[in-house]
Length: 286
Ligand code: NDP
Picture (cartoon, protein in one colour):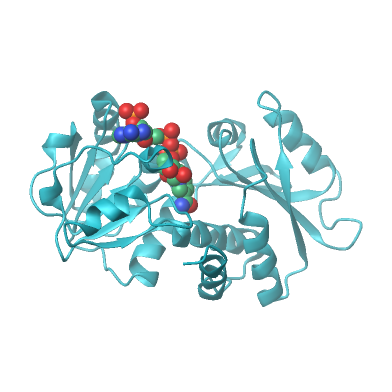
């Protein structure tokens, strides 16, 4: 491999790779982290052809790149490409952070820890002993299950429109749930009964203005209803949950926290996420 220490400008190179990628907020987030910490990095956007992930990564490494964030639709490709996976990346079956080392490609998934940190630290909701409901069983849901279980939940329930996908996740993580001392259940939306402390919308329904089907008895004044999606306006899921008295939050904090974890992995320095989250929130006008 070529010398990956620095770019010609003396800056270590990182990027977010995806398709599409123009919308990504990651370059702004990492630029702010670099300003805060004084770390000498440059962070770019990398548009890879849909059939050209491996080639694009190889070219980035050859040009001196030290690490990548990976977004839609390449998280499974990144998992396949990795030489070393962290336990949470292996459990997720998907990767959003690559680090290029002398021994090969090291990979992690920081989405789950980003979600947990946003809920516990930014929103002040301790997860130990709580009942948590996840709506959805796609890549984002899968990446968050192990980090959630490791918080010592009392119960985690996963429901999904395509019921088999929820069952698949329950089977996959049942051992981890037992090890963590929590109960893991799931299936069709009607298996989630009673009030939950946290309801996480990990479906992409909000993109189309659709609220996933679930029993609204899950929601109450002590419930945090969290949508992984974010935007200039509260999502339809958040508006829906507010009608049942729930406190709501969107996924902007998760985005910033997963980035902070990647930065720490690459640079060994933990940035302050709060000012960056506040800046992004202000830019959205919220
Ligand atoms: P996937 O395509 O992997 O999964 C989509 C999931 O949403 C599936 O469970 C699907 O159900 C479900 N779904 C889609 N539409 C509906 C609907 N109308 N009603 C009920 N269920 C529906 O997507 P991801 O898991 O990658 O992403 C999910 C969301 O999380 C997206 O909004 C994404 O933007 C967000 N996200 C946010 C992050 C952050 O940092 N804030 C990080 C990662 C993701 P089915 O199986 O039946 O098709």
